[in-house]
Length: 152
Image (cartoon, rainbow, N blue to C red):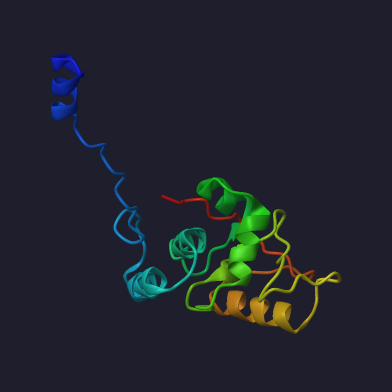
């Protein structure tokens, strides 16, 4: 036989609050020209982590670069996991994975390739995209200037 106290507890028990889903577009600042990309990312059938990575890319201003380390720190993940998500970016170059470089300014990988000698067709394309946005590179292909770290 249940006591009247347990009946009252059961009758007044409130449902547990459910966590609110995180938005991929309203809680961060991105340039107006990137808004259509946020919608494409949100509607894609990809993992939540990949969507977070690609959404963060939309914050990086044109003509600036960040590092795998800074991006992974912002996301609370590892640089390798971030690199893997970048490799699977189906929206490149509109969702600008080319704006992520290795620490020290080396270009790192692009389109799933990380060349051992710092050269190759994909790296040539990454250099071209970055130069087209005004990013300066030295004679060894390393990014000159400071990296962007303004993730919100």
